[in-house]
Length: 325
Ligand code: PBG
Image (cartoon, rainbow, N blue to C red):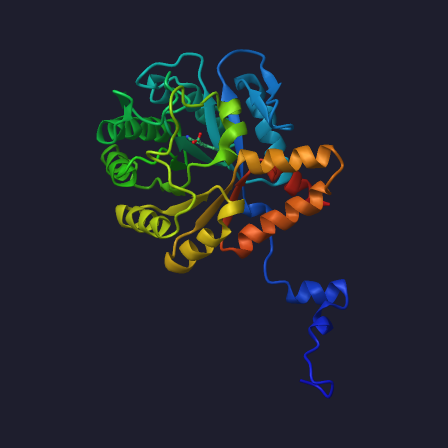
């Protein structure tokens, strides 16, 4: 307190160099994981209508895309596959020549320095669009685990550096850890989508991945957005089962959950800045209603401030460019 009787907080904000000295949170290129959508077929490089700037690419375009990321200084990608054929068991998810397995092999061969994360789920591969096996309108838990384990092992065989199961079946971390260990992949970490809400923010992704459920919704396996304690229970069981990273998804509306998870569990925390969060900003920016760069940097910085160590984001290339400027 000085003789005015109040505190002068503005002292530390007076110039940019002072502000830089006291800045508590920094976003860096190492924080970024870039999602890519690889499709079966030839000569495809097609923008996803609801996600301007995000493309479906077929394998011929993959090397260029990876070189671009490398040049920008992005160190990690998460790979999603869009197969031609879907069936009730999602068999393209765990096929040796599945689109994701091919993409992973190609990336590791051409740009081995990139850390490749494989999203392990069935919804892009099942004809009903659910993340597990379906019987009488219900998504079965335990029988789905076997297929997820097969998927994870085939992704590790293809060369994935990290397995990221996103399906929200109970026990998936334990099952996948055991499956990977038995197949000789005890060195491969699991980045668990531990806290994943049944969110309307996934809308544009489902267009991009052709993965909308064909009946019902995902509320019987993804979490209710109203719940906080349940997030702690989910994260706790995944940690016990052997998760190496924890994901909170979506990010923007769940910063409180991120902070709580980070305070309680000492594992690297990943924010998934999902498709709807991306598309809303893009749409507003394209209309000239917001300043895209400023709003994206503010938003991603707030995720780090909330406790995220890493951010999966469709803005990764833009952010890397801005940080390189
Ligand atoms: C499910 C999956 C989803 C996303 C990634 N993997 C969501 C879902 O459809 O339930 C969403 C990602 C995004 O919205 O960006 N395997």
